[in-house]
Length: 503
Image (cartoon, rainbow, N blue to C red; front, side):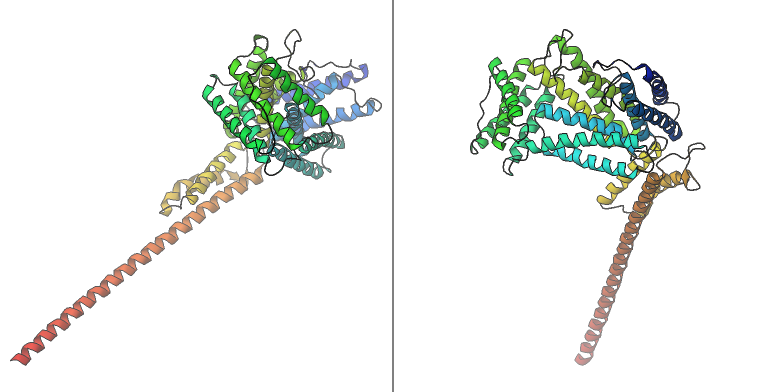
């Protein structure tokens, strides 16, 4: 599904579906108000109420569309908005591991997989991460069979199945890579990805690009031993066409059977050479007719990167909604995968790949932020973040050998005690509410107390050993003194005896 303002063509609305649209628009408005209200915490009951209203409309819509299941009109786009917002709101209130929270994550994973297939270069690590998280999503769906609408679960399962199908296609393409060639392939993916990032720097990094060119030449020599050949390009128009033709041929010749490893690596190496040649000529300059799209994507990427650094302290998951929406609109405005200008003209290879990199990078950042979401309500996030910081500090102290004296742990103990005293009947309350995530916060608190206890015991044992060693040294000194005294007395007695014998 697309965003509400997507330029994608829509089927005219059936008059019978107008009441459904009106109610969904009202729910979306309520969800946006919840998202924008920074003065109050998002509450579970408000999110659940909106969720129930949306599911009610989904059931009505499904009953009306028994013979036109694949129809996509404005109702579907607004419904997608509602489900995206509800998904992010479930994360915001700490219900991260429940089925409704999966909608935004699965949608983002699908976008990423589509872009990987389109770009035609990716590593096995990219695929393994998504595969693992999709399997976890299936577990959450199974767990929610008794508590959530079958309509929602069916929709989620269908989306996960689409992701798994695309994942299988991508894995098939890499299946012929042997152990000795896989490191070279991964290196090429890393180089090409980093080169794309170089185009988005405020100042074009000439030295860094030259260094990558040298690395490619070294790889070129190494791969010749495997019979893999690729020529260094001067970035001419013919080279660009050759690269696009090679990429297209690879996709056409191997839609089902996987491409041979040498062909896969050869094509990727050639693309790297062509790309460096084009980059050196362009030096980060984007064609004027695509500068607006470039600036918008660059701004989104930069804001998401900043959010990644501060997300634990400042991010509300619903904040991602605005970024998702903008990216979806840009992505869906493409024609046959091409970015087009206001006159409908497709972008050149340089702009196409640079824009696609920014688009894919932004979705990847959202994906990582969704993964990093903790199952704790934003109402408890300040306490949770403080405890997380304390745990990291205590763990670091322990790894560095502990403390020399138990009194060094007093600041940690005082802070933990002050947090523990905030509990009412064992729960952390915000007003009269009991926010989600109590178990996670309490578990973290107990782990911190345990770390302090372990460090204190280690410090006391160390101090006891030092006292034991100190008292042992004193005893040894006293024994030596006594020996010296006895030796002196014996010497004096011997001298006296000698004197008597002489007399």
